[in-house]
Image (cartoon, rainbow, N blue to C red; front, side):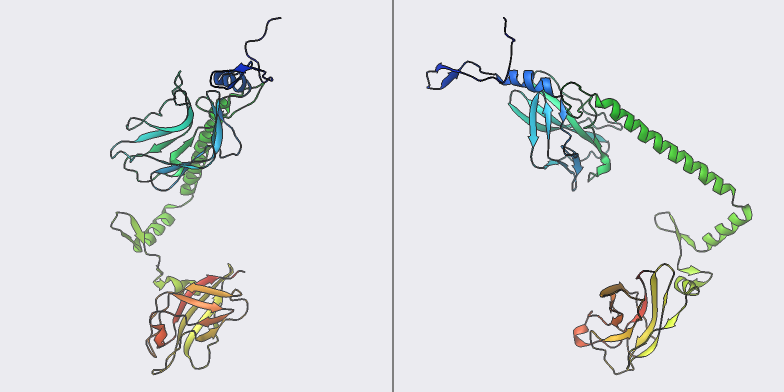
Length: 370
């Protein structure tokens, strides 16, 4: 009964010794026979899809990308990338766009698996570099990077993941069914584009309907109010002065709708400060606290206290706006206000080690919860 041309694995039997003393066997399998007759018969070409980011391209810093660890089958050979590889890209062209593609390649002459970066010819609309599959090389493309003219860094948005596309890569599938994942990939891309177009159309229709609901008188009045507080910036864009509303400072305008209370001030301090809490859970705190002339305020002095419900437990560092003073000594101007379990402190700042001449003017807001 005739034998099949190739069969494996079967036990090998020693049949002798060669001139160098090495044992010879009767069932020797060539590397090509193993790859083509065994691995090639069982699995397809592509990336092994576990883990999900196997051999995925990720943006790094500047003009660098990272090839994630993972395994692949190319030219019926198995390639294993055990650690992430940093891949530098060439500088961008100053006038034209470019596309760089990353390939996992079986190099037959070099007897190795490698990754290579191919650059397109710079152009207004560059073409994606192509695969090379011949007697010398077998390749899969795991992704490509669009490099705009003059770019100095690569973002994830510049990277196209082609691992699912079986026309250039695909996922490794097993015996019996070799699935063409390019169809699924193309369907997903088409669905995403269709969804995006639909959302843009819906937004446009909504925007037009809203424009139609605004009367000419109301629209004109709104535009006049905007123009009253607007100016053109150096870059040509319109800037709106949000710091004044109906002639009032924006902070004073907001305070009309809050229930304000006097802030309990520690003994030895002069001034008036107010606190309030809005329905969103933000505490508003403003006012002026100082000592009479000739009195120093040591660093880490408590100047006032907030009641329960108007602070969070523990230490809070709250940004404070610039200060001004109309009485007492020149005030201390901190970058932050320190609140520890409701106690308001003068923090260390500037020449604080020599003592400060007064307490800060408060003008700040911070979140504590509803």
